[in-house]
Image (tube, one colour):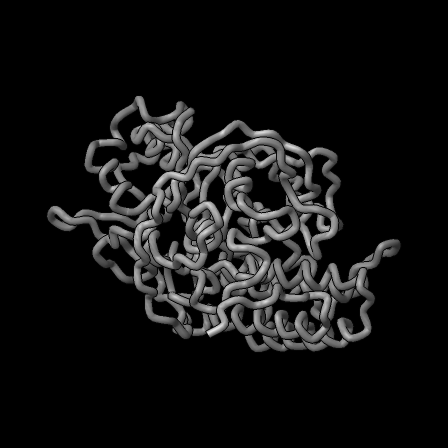
Length: 434
């Protein structure tokens, strides 16, 4: 079986249209199993009301693909009061629970009308205009992951989506610790890449000293050792802000864990199960990751170290993924929710980089030690609110999770959340201290 595929060409109208249809089908499928009562979610600062979020992705597509104009006011929406309802730039988060949202059937009709009009506009678009269709695609892809995060947060059932059997665990990589020589490289996305978010622009020179990084992410077993050793009560392993968070939350162990007798259980969506020891630790915040590293005599990689490691062993321009420039076929990576959850950290040897780093793309996002900041010469793209408001208050995550869309993530992609958040599908790998 050929497991290597060409990189998706989103400049091809047919491939872009198929991707837009695919992400819309995901959007509508993710909450389709919920009962009417489950649609009425409580107010939480880390989620959105489901009906609002679905309306928002349709609004975003309509605004950027059909309505926005460079030199004049946007065209009217196809839905009455759409801007006052669904424009996240101007609708405060807390207000989204109290808006007079359209009936479900009207919302579905709006989304379908927008999608069909988007297809028609795509057919007559110029290459330059296709930037906005890709923006809408990736924006919706990110919201589908956020929707799964909402189901996990609320303890709702997972959607009934097709799933592959878990892959066999590969042999432990020959080297558990990978030494990298460091040196000068260009961090970020080069201008010739097909699409880049503004926070990835542009590639700029960085010089790193030599460092060593673990070949796999930290597992549940390794993190449980920290918990069982009293790590949440040992002040010396926590930063000042991390300890303040732990004290305020009275945290004793990771989010979604609980003890059953002498064994750890973990909640995945609405199901409690025995903690899978060989899977990566997931749903820990930056402070918890940092504390584990100090306890283990390790540290988190910087963002530059993470990207350098993911690209090491490849020539410049052949380093979109840790394994090269081709895509791996479905089931060869832990992306696109193909396994309905994470896989063991040692599985999927085909994702290895030339230096032996496994699953740097997919399975769980990975915290880095770097605050989210602009690259030199940063200029916001037309969607100005994507990055700029969050600089210096968020922490960089890299790599993608089991439900991140494979067309979205790559070695240079930057994700970012505030350091106290742990509702994301996030873990970490570690570096040796210098």
